[in-house]
Image 1 (spheres, rainbow, N blue to C red):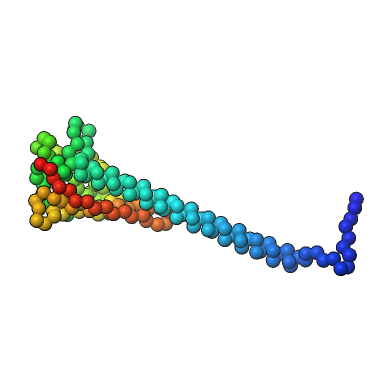
Image 2: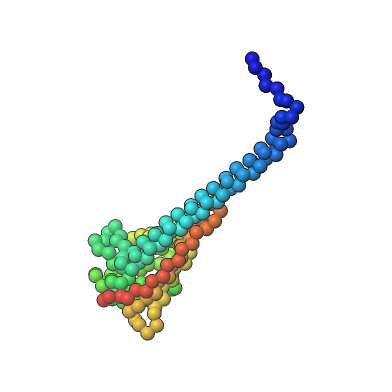
Length: 173
């Protein structure tokens, strides 16, 4: 067995120097981990925002072009209406230009509901949840144009992701 001995003019690391080096290394590692976690959280939030934006666009498309209820054979949205009324800001009733049936979209709690025939009950279809606001506003100067404004929200970790969407619809019939 060979032993290495230091000469009097050679120096080695002392215990305090090793402790300081280990402390600095731990600080650098902790900084790198916190940066990674912040980036990961930002990525998750942006991914959720993209998903929410896609969901909002799909729901808006269903409002405009229609949603097919289980008993229906065609889709009839607001743009296919022959006439419409807005009894409350978050409800629209419209007469379908395809079959003359009165239909409606409305906000119930945080859900957008579709009623394919307002003369009967129990046939409503939920389009989506997580809606914070929905409003239908007739555009002044026109009896054929409607503004639809919708906001949705989802919780992620300890934050909330929100998305708003707005469109104008001209009824065709």
